[in-house]
Length: 128
Image (cartoon, rainbow, N blue to C red; front, side):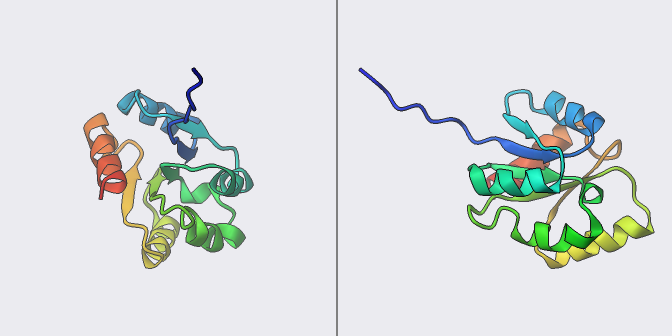
């Protein structure tokens, strides 16, 4: 008897390697797909059924950032979580812009990204 196999949806990651390691350690049972750049992120969104996206907004080119983030996850209602390294004026402007797009989930690397905090943000984003 043949059974159809369905892959569990993964979370698309566009973050630096250290950030990815921290996420994988916090929730080892989750499936993550590492993405290399904003085009890879966009194609992953189009060609798969992601559970969510975790994105460092500074890894997106400024000229494509707003449009990419505006469309990301909309087709399948996948939540977007921003994961940023440091808070400084340029990032504050970007985060405010992302907030106007409706992105409400945020992690800071090295500050509030302990395993329990990562699990809490993921639960809030995925099961809201």
